[in-house]
Amino acid sequence: MGNRLKDKVAVVTGAGRGIGRGIALLLAEEGAAVVINDLGANIDGSGQTASVADEVVNEIKAKGGRAVANGDSVSNFKAAENIINTAVKEFGRIDILVNNAGILRDRMVFNLSEEDWDSVIAVHLKGAFNCARHASVQMRQQKFGRIISMSSTSGLYGNTGQANYGAAKDGIAGLTRVISRDLGKYGITVNAIAPAAQTRMTASVPDKAREIRQQRGVALPGTLSGSVAPLRAEADDVAPFAVYLATDAAKDINGQTFMVRGGVVSLLNYPAPARTITKRGRWTAEEIVQLFPSTLGMDLVNPAPPKVE
Amino acid sequence: MSGMLDGKVAVVTGAGRGIGRGVALGLAAAGAKVVVNDFGVDLNGQAPTSGPAFDVVNEIKQAGGDAAVNSDSVSTWDGGANIINTAVKEFGRIDILVTCAGILRDRMVFNMSEDDFDSVLAVHLKGTFNCLRHAAPLMREQKFGRIITFTSGSGLFGNPGQANYGSAKAAISGLTKVAARDLGRYGVTVNGIAPVAATRMTMTDEFLKAREIRKQQGIVREERALAQLEDLKPEDVAPMVVFLASDHAAGVNGQFFLCAGGSISLVSLPRAVNTIYKPEGRWTLDELDDLVPLTLANGLANPAPPRQA
Image 1 (cartoon, rainbow over the protein chains, first blue to last red):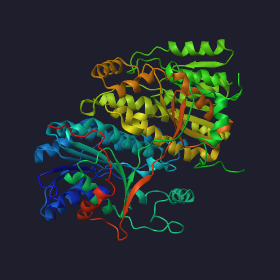
Image 2: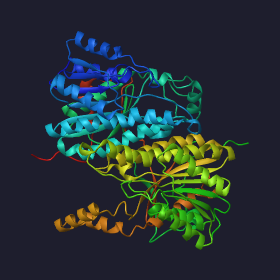
Image 3: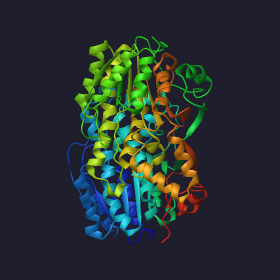
């Protein structure tokens, strides 16, 4: 039990299970009062059982910590305001927001329904915006805040069958980069984590999709035997770095994305021009055809080349 | 007529003005038949008039090309279906989809309304998905397709005041990466362009006012960079789109290109630039306190450091 976050107040969305639960427990261990938000939904967003949030609250209280449950949906602008207000009402302020709530509905893009798209974007991307938007008003006034949002390697690298989830998660990385610049001057930092861990969410990925991803070299370590060395990556492994970002020690880390998987923590680069061709005035398409293979297109690999008939 | 796209059928969304117009004209000049989609709205998404789309169709026809107008909104699922169906009905197929349609509603995140966030995401992100989703089954069946999406430096690098636009544009990059992997094996490529050009979207009153203020304050570096924006014509983006749509770019998939006047760059994909690894697994906060400043956070700059009180 540390005291790095003594007198701090945190909100963790999707904190009833998995990675969110691990972060909430560690925040509480470091002295933060925590709002445990969880709708208690199934992995596809259906159904609701508020009890998962209550269980985490009880666990924190049993260890002498402070916590309260909230069952609002992050995907609704008004309800998200209520999540943030719960922190203010119960504990007097909001210092730390962890955007972790998420659902999964994998389909190949040519089969993805409008509802599969909308619901995944609503929970991940709109949900992260909703909570950050309401928290930022308070954090700006108090000149202190920490916003930590879960992105994903699915968005950063592109996972087959996750057009909705990949878009939402890369969108969260964009949201993080923008609002780190909107809020930095007020003593607020905004960072993202792309976690990899075995949770009920990753367990729901079909074996076939895992096979395809492994063939393309994008399988998550620890999820398959064979060519990729199995690496232990538990949900609770994400918590220490997430909590570190919430502490005073991380006050100058802003606008970054980190990958966390077991004992591996990586800083990811910002997208940047890797190779450039320049001329005075407009290129013609014919000139690009001539130049491309030996310049911009050098060594480019098609991540999913056409099947040879 | 260069004929690089002879016999091909293209859809360009937001093709009434700016970059989309330039792309439509460029594709037509290369031999493609083009559906010119434009809802004809103001920059903030209000007051539809499809006038500009008709002007572009006339311009293409006068130059000896073939084009049809469509004025559906990309932001609805059925609108997206209609846009793609217009290509099939008028020209028998859909080979090329270029998604330029977009609106802008800049606010700092702590002042951004739900409507500002939703409407920008609806046009950019949902609009790109709606069109891509309806084109994908046809392209998959015919084993050929070219999808060129529009992302932005705002999402990739982070522009203050654009939580909505930056999220949408970064999410489009995630969608692009996943769709490239879902569709690549069917002979379909999906790539993104981050354009920089002087259009009604970038040359706004606010922008010109801010530039005037900076000029008066003598911020020379900024002034020099901004003066260049007027030299970056929206038509300059078209040649790269024509190239990506052509057979010459069959192996280019899941990539992003920054296009600014006569400068074209391949954008780097995310990668780990700095890593700490603990073979036993989970880090402790004590360990992170000691290690992170010397490793992951070493040399990181806060893009918006707190104001000195």
